[in-house]
Image 1 (cartoon, rainbow, N blue to C red):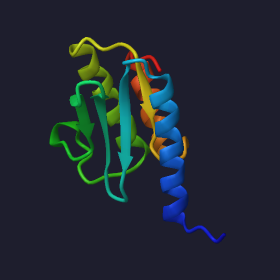
Image 2 (image 1 turned 30 degrees about the vertical axis):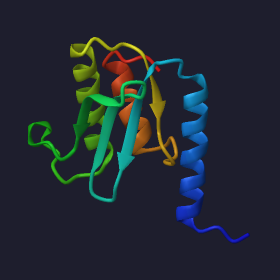
Image 3 (image 1 turned 90 degrees about the horizontal axis):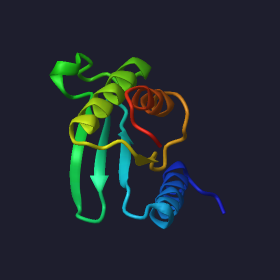
Image 4 (image 1 turned 90 degrees about the vertical axis):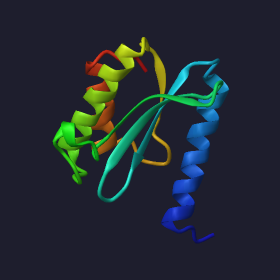
Length: 119
């Protein structure tokens, strides 16, 4: 039963997604992806299958291009909260994927909450 990191990540991601789908009742999903060099987030409407808003550390106007640290995650979280407000979204579910709610993911979530998103 030797699981490698990738298998554990995929199991965690499935577990989180299935819990969100069971509770969603049509609410939007704030999905986070973190790579070794960047962090990105999308506000997704699963019923219609469309992305309402998105933010990423690859955007030049955020000033953190190519960085993947807590500061970049905070700026991305604030940006998605602002864009969600423009789109008229106040509530959503936080989908951390298979990533642990710690460090960069937590900083992004905290910044989005401070920006006005509720989850």
